[in-house]
Image (cartoon, rainbow, N blue to C red; front, side):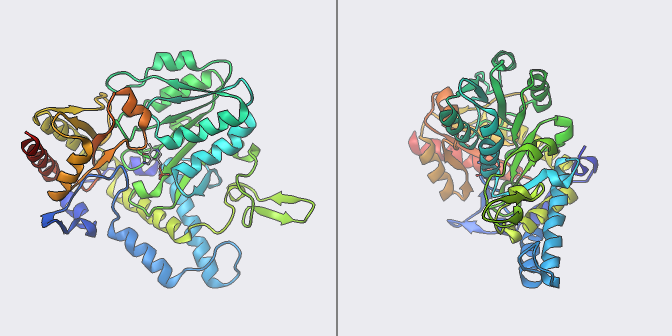
Length: 414
Ligand code: PMP
């Protein structure tokens, strides 16, 4: 278990809410009800302060400076890497690569590991519930290589068909890329089981953890996956930064992703010798302050306790599911038995975009649209959904405000 999972905490919701200064405001004259954390979560004071303090006191470029500021900045940057390692339960810090986020992490694997492994006639396997960022890089790779993208189906609840998955894992499957939690449906996939099925057939697995990281304890060694990607901005940290875990043996064998400074040991016009992992994959000056902010965010999550956060959100999801069932003409999209804090729905009375606009007038922020998962919308024959998504700082009054606002949508369109 990762260190976040091992601790047990009392969850003080009122205190947690106070730690997010942005929540204390009104929009359109109504108290802000923020229910769009699956798109991006808000930031606790600990993160805002850590980033400001770092810029005020310790900022310099990292890794190359002999002077004190550069060493302090390097130490802060590398301490964040160690924190990510602990957060993911990885064995070694050199297995953690900083990226711009989940999207870049997946592109990195597709462009290096994928490009080396996949050839004409091969197959890449994904699922029907993937975010576009876990579809398009693989589609591009398949186009380039003359390979085929295969898709594991989901049922009417949004549950992955594991029998079909097993059948689709074939002799030509070179990689399986699967989301841990669906951003459009909330489904939590049984990753350890899926990895075991894939590995039994010699297929490596990349897990898109963008929606899992804020909600549940992750242990990549227990999951057994080969790669795991997540974004800082969904786990209470800044945007523009994220991390990729990769097994050391894969990372060592993979070619670099981008060339440039920081990723080399030596350069002549004839030859470049690459740096060891993880630096081989970190060309150019990174988002130094962002990485420090990510470290502070994970420290906040650990101090709050992912186990306690998960328990709180689970109870809130149950409350929200029940409360939404009382809104006339509402259909939930995504009713898997094992879900994380996503309530995606359509209303008979109004289009998702109209719902979003009216809710905004009531101070309620939800996302509307296809949620970068158009194949999921197609699967459920809807053009778009409205999505309320939960985070550690939400409470029952947020759900109550959502339900009240949905009743007024119904009245308006009656
Ligand atoms: N995968 C999933 C499941 C997501 O929800 C998201 C963000 N909506 C991404 C990938 C992409 O993350 P990012 O935009 O931070 O790279």
